[in-house]
Structure formats: C-alpha cells, structure tokens
Amino acid sequence: MNIDDLRQLAKKRLPKVCYDFIEGGTDDELGLMTNEQAFRQMRIVPRYLIDVSEREQSTTLFGSTYSSPIGIAPTGLAGLFRHSADLMLAEAARDANVPFIMSGTSTSSVEDLGKLAPDHGWYQIYSAADPSISEDMIKRVRDAGLKTLVFTVDVPQPSNRERGIRSGWGPSRTLAWKTKFEALRHPAWMMQWLQHGTPCFSNWARYAGPNASAKEVADLVARQFGAPMTWKHVERYRKLWNGIFVLKGIMHPDDALRAHSHDVDGIIVSNHGGRQLDNAPSPLEVLPTICHAVGDRMPVMLDGGVRRGLHALIALCMGAKFVFQGRPTLYGVTAGGVAGAAKALAIFRREIDISMAQIGATKIHDLGPQFLMWKHKSDEHKQPLRDTSLRVCDIADE
Figure 1: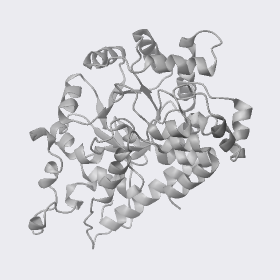
Figure 2 (figure 1 turned 120 degrees about the horizontal axis):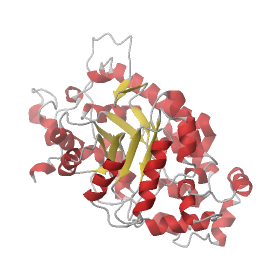
Figure 3 (figure 1 turned 30 degrees about the vertical axis):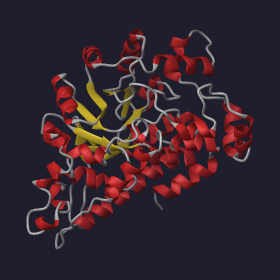
Figure 4 (figure 1 turned 180 degrees about the vertical axis):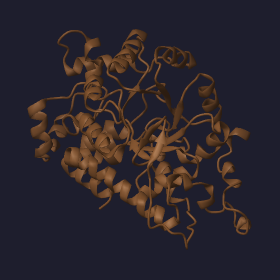
C-alpha cells in the first residue's frame, strides 16, 4: 500500500549487508532522521469549498513536461540488489514519464541508458582524480544522446559509514564468513549472485584495463574518489557539456548563486541522503533560503527524506520546482524489478493526487507558501508563510 511496505519486501529479499548499505547513513545517522523529521514537522493548511474534481500533476522542467513532479535520484550499486536494476529503474521512469538519474556508480552503462530511455535518462557524474576519465565520461554521455548531466559535488571525501562496516561492508570489500552465511537465508538474492556474480561498475570498466575484474574496477573507482574538487571543475565540465547542466548537493544559498554565475542550469538541494555529513541540516530546512536567493534565475530541485506524495507537495510549496527520491524506488526495484519500481512511482502519484484534493489544489503550479502553516502562534491572523517562510532557515543572514 505504501513505500514502507516496499521497504519491508526489499529487506526480506536482501542479505543484511546489502540492506544496511541502502538504509545506512554516516556516523550516528542523525542526518537520516533529520531528513525525514523535517517533513513530519511541517503542517499544511487545507483550503475547502474548491472544485477539485479534476486534478493535474504534470510538471514542466527544462522544457520537458513530465507526468508527475517526482523523479528518481541516483542510487549507486543498484545492480547488487537486483541484476540490471539501473535499467529497470530507467524503464519504469520512462513508462511513468518522469526523469531517472543514473548513478555515477551504476552497474549498467550510460550507453545502454541512452538506448533505453534517451528522453528520460539523466547521468550523474563524479569528479575523478584523473581528469581524462571525467572528460571521457562527459563525451560518452553526449554520444549516448542524453540531454542532462548532473555533477554531484557533496563527496569531497568518502564518509564514515559505520553501519555498513559493522555489517561487513569493509574497505577490503571481502565479506566475512558470518556475512556470507547470513546471505544464505535469502535464497532469491543468492541465486541471482551465483548466476551473475559480483556486479561491476560498468561505466568505469574501460578505464581499469582490458578484461578487468569487478574487484579491479572497484579498486579503480576507490582510487579516483576523494580528489580535490573546486569550482574550476564546474567551469571545465560546463565548457565540455553543451546540454542541461545541474549541480547536486548544494546546501548553501551562496553556493547556489555561485552555481548560477557559472552558467549552471539548475541545482538539486541535497545532503546525499544523510550519507555524507551527519549534522548537516535537511535539504527541506535550507530550501526556502536557497529559493529566496536564487529567485527565478534557475530551477531549484530537492531530494532527501521523501517518503510520501505529501512530502513532495510540501517541498513544492516551499519553493522547489521538482522533487527526487532514491530509496523508495530502490526498495521497489529490489522487491519486484520493473514492476516494483513502477509500483513505487504509482504510489507517489496516487498520494500526490489525493493530497492535492485534500488541500484544495488542482494543478502543481497552484502550490505555494499559502498552504503552509503559520510559523508563530502570533501570526495566526496573518497570511500563511507567504512572507515568513523565507526565514525558516535564514542562513544567508547569519
């Protein structure tokens, strides 16, 4: 019935080490709780006596019209949870007419994405220590026919993901015997692993040498991550890429404005799903200030903590032009392949539709701060957050 049901099905199918990789954050995992709590603490003020018999949630972004304002964020190593999961997610997104961002650590190739879903597939790029690798990847994305490149900027160093290490996901990537024994309790996943073996970071394979094993490719990726990353990389990638260029991981209004000055076409406000900096604020908390700073210069999008269709509406009311989610569709594809990913998207679509009716909005562009609860009790007789929402997290003035 809901995303949590899909989460439970995914948990049942996966060994603990794999499930903990999906669910885990960094350090004490405060960021995971912060992301979800931010939505739980928001209140929507409904408007009644409005004809909501017909509702439309189509949304235009970068000149493309999508059937719903919620897409699929990049989720790395998806092929470990179900073989070819990246392409299954892309197929579900294409059929639902929403965007899918292929992870820079996917286990399917950007070339296959271009063949399957050229109009709905975006590609996420990480900055490699060897600049020739990043430059070649950008060329491959262009040659694959994709129109949108997403540069993820919030991984200056790999983070301290203790849950994964405790579950057996150590730096050596060699699983302990107790971890392998626990995996035997999940026969469907084990049969997949025996049939297909350890998935490979397909987009990186050509840079690891001819006939490189999955482990050798993984070692290459580990060496390429954590290199210095600056605005010069943004300038370089912008020059190399003539399509739509998006920065993902922006959390400060000054960085948002600087992105615009570098001819970036849009930003995704994100804290990497709570997997990088534990005590960072949630994307939803900083969203109003970033939207206020950016204005109409470029689209501001959001991901992190989205588990309900109503969460997407909250983000849109607070200024986001589009919303992405990662774990929910990963639960779905893990549990049921293409049908499972499609089910997750259908759940979001249904919940968005119901919530629009409940609050009195017939179109996505009707959403705005007028639906948000007053910030202070003393404001009860004033307009809802139309004026005060910009001070929800006013880090620009601090």
